[in-house]
Length: 423
Image (tube, rainbow, N blue to C red; front, side, top):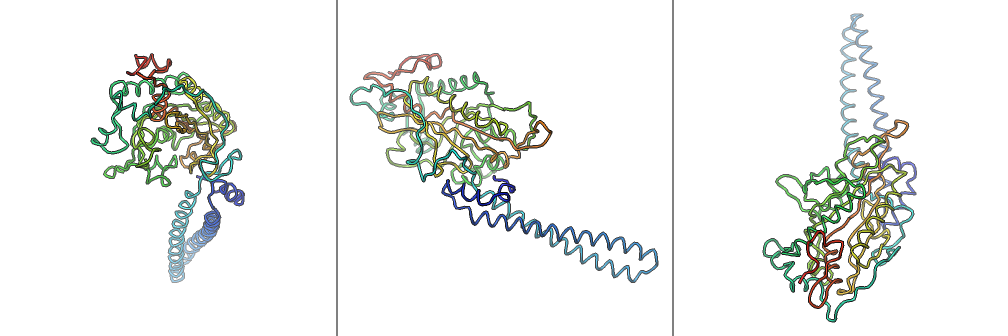
């Protein structure tokens, strides 16, 4: 959430920066400023009434001492009227402040100056490519056909048990999932990230803290009886570990990693772009989360990008890194880099990771702060990244490593799988 100070200090900057995200903030910014002006006016009036009440109370005491009871009773009536006006003002102020907060949460995070303008994915900026084109056999198959051929992922069984977008992994397919999770977690912990195992359901306060609520409520699975939400990513519970905390300067940075299943309602229902593992309602993902001092967050972002790139490179996959344009960024992000893998069998790029810096946007919603060198309370910066999301990694691994009679397992995964091929 943007701070009121940012809006008051430079409202035109807020409007122009959010235009990079193709968001017209003018009406909301003007409304917030008007509500804040009204808040100040109500506070001044309330303070004046309180002063009058104190003055009248003192006068009543003096009148009573002098035996001027009739005048004292009249003064008491005036005090009662002042209290009624004060209560009415308090009610007005409460409603005003509720609307002020409701308007503030409608504003997305400001994109940082590095974010290119643009409307959608076609305007994203390719900043790096790596890896080589795989040598595929003649008649190479997409991963959903390979999954059926080797009986390692059953999409039809998932439909029977739950519905579309909930695959069942079997045999070596299930073990490959577990191997990737352990490989990613081991690499993350070796890089200094502390592993945590969070709940996969969160309350509304957690969803609000990281910005999924109210912006992405329709994309989340809701457990109505208990008022919980299934997590769309481990980012939500892990970042909320620090909600309402004031951290010591010496405790920063905080670096954590977690594996969770992830649940998202927005998966598509038809077309090649959603076939097989390309888009699911439930999938596995390993996440990295960081809490940083503001002056350190962009160096941390570079470090996270390099770390994720190392994972992709060691899997031997062809990849590219994109800096997202304003129109393709999330509500909460200040800057995002996406990693994509090339699927030669499908002839398309598959997104497998987003690495983002949220600056102080999430921290303001979370009330996540730290005490600086001078003892002042400051907002932290938060960052997170997929490290990695499994479905499209598995899709690319199966497709790019297929031979005529088997699928070869990348060497770095063999200590985790216990086998070097799927046949």
